[in-house]
Length: 222
Image 1: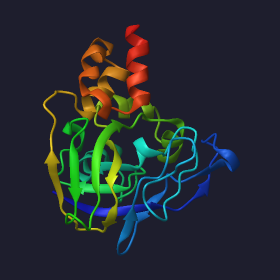
Image 2 (image 1 turned 45 degrees about the vertical axis):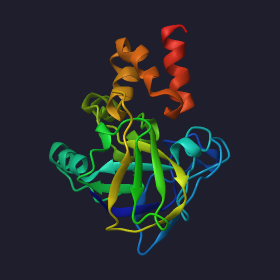
Image 3 (image 1 turned 90 degrees about the horizontal axis):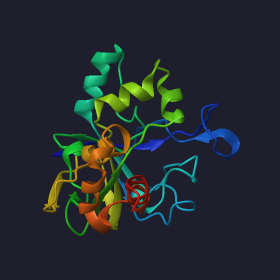
């Protein structure tokens, strides 16, 4: 399990975002060399957990629970076949493009050591991507949000437990895996298409992004 690339934003203006100045950082491209990873601060003020990266809409993206976004190269390969176009690493706005990492089967609260302990960061899986109009506008595909949702493989958001440096080729090691069933895909399904799963999402406990937990509680009336 490893990182194929570490991707940083090339900011540009877009009519598909509500961010101030219409700036978006969804256009992410592989970086050369090492990139520092650290906790960025709370949602609303904190941006990306990667030095040199950009979050355009701080109201809805970035912060501690969205410090790092990981997406599997295997999924990009699937979408290349579906869309009939090349999708380089970073095409979905991900910070980490991974190889042989079961990103969507990762459990909430699962911890990844990237690189060597003491040098690379320790990260914790805490949430998943919900497709937005910025993402849809960037891809420019008809019905994209529905198509992405139906695939149920959204990629994982991670918080930073310990800071460190990362670069392409770094190994990814799962150092802790909780005993519950609540995976990234499980949470996504519960919040999009299978609300009957919502009560079971709460088994993830405090590791779950508070925003996702709040949505789950609200929808089950707790």
